[in-house]
Image 1 (tube, rainbow, N blue to C red):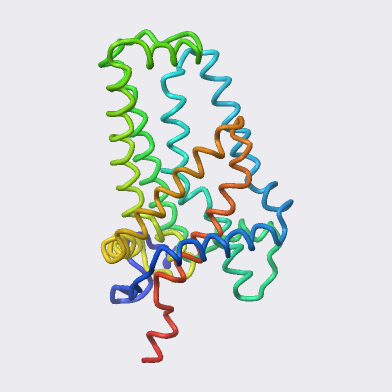
Image 2: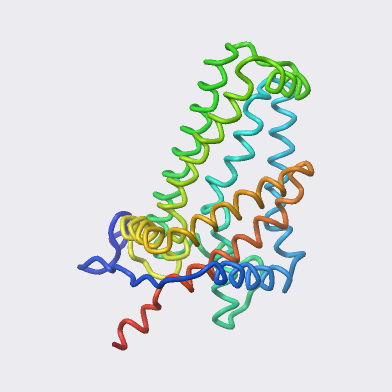
Length: 271
């Protein structure tokens, strides 16, 4: 446990990675590479992420039983907030494929033995807090407009939103609020988890590097956030089953986006 650390890395000094400038074309190249990683062994990866559509269906049934339909849309949107951590095993698969190592799906769980597991866990907790705050804010917004008695069905919710006073306020304000949470998540974790898998720099540097990457590449990375959010929404529409394809492709693509954004440590040492 002497080597266990969270905020800082293993060295005496902060390792601040060098950030490159990317373009929109790099986003599509990362997506192409992510799709290639996925299709190499799609059955393995679908098995790995099958839990996501199952969880989605369970949440839908739960809301149907407990009349919490107003949280359906926020929960679907919440996949984008926890996605950076949810796909961490997929980053490892892409890293291994890039290095020419064995890419059996079981290797996705080797992240549990990563030297940076403390930092990874800390960032996971941070995302969980953001996700919880988002759901709390969404619930508070709904109750401020419609009260604390939710509709009994999805049809009732849709009727309430599109026909009653306050419906459009809920849609517009809710989406703006969600966008704020999404931007915070993007700025703090867009490449944080891939960076920690590749270089044990600590949670602080991982978050700081993600923020610097967004500040240096605001248009491409904001576009990346929109692409990921739209993809997750579309994947969630068919009873969440589409997430079994969308999540792994975005997960693999994020690794390649990280490679495009960050100068390799070996290149820095060779200067």
